[in-house]
Image (cartoon, rainbow, N blue to C red; front, side, top):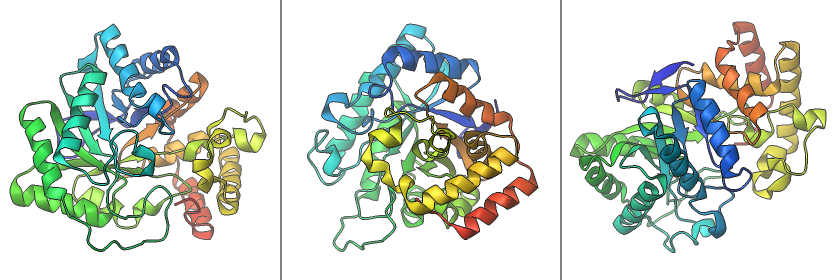
Length: 344
């Protein structure tokens, strides 16, 4: 395994991070235990979860993933071996079952943190993240920006609440997710101006079908030492062989859930076929190509993989040993120039 520093902290995190959002929905607790045991044995020390999980968000499965992780750490007595990241759910129509509010409030933040600590059965969270902005912004596949007048800027309040938990040792570091360059710089500016916790990472979607992070945020990640935690590296499974080989099943994620249809667009399918052909020509699976490409990006801190099957997990973790040469990267960029960001 390879490791990188988490932002400006002294924490070394594995370049492969174990994503967990299927546990409690597509995966049972026993299956999740097997995944965590295997990943840790392979040197993966970084796990990412959220109070929202399992996904898709439902009242019946709210908090189930954190509960499974907490049960595993309790059973294995290995909390100190894990760099654990979780998130507070943002406001929106699909989180009304969590909290019926349209904004982050101090009470909202405190309830979320306390709930995560309880379900995870831990005294501290290594990286606590804001899952998505409450203001109108471009995330979750949204292309068109719709400006929102009258939005109440409460960035400083969030940092002040998080500071209380940092002071108590219950949160070690903080991060953001699904953010824009403007939002990221706001957090950085306020932390410096008021001596508040500094964000260590940005967790945004990043894959061969969505390279929008490279516009603005990639430079910021490098210059501000605030690296990307790349989620959805395989575009919810689109960037795997099974959908092209015809080995997918009704239980595969893109077949189960309509909310990921941006990966089913004509341009996404066209680009995926070209990446598939390139992977085959290079002696790799499509998943290996997609993950290895992310792993070697200079602005990426960690690549958040996820799997429902053990063979998928093994393939994704093994991508850490693959280095794409300059010629393959040139071919990737050529495909991207012809069909840019079909699923952003």
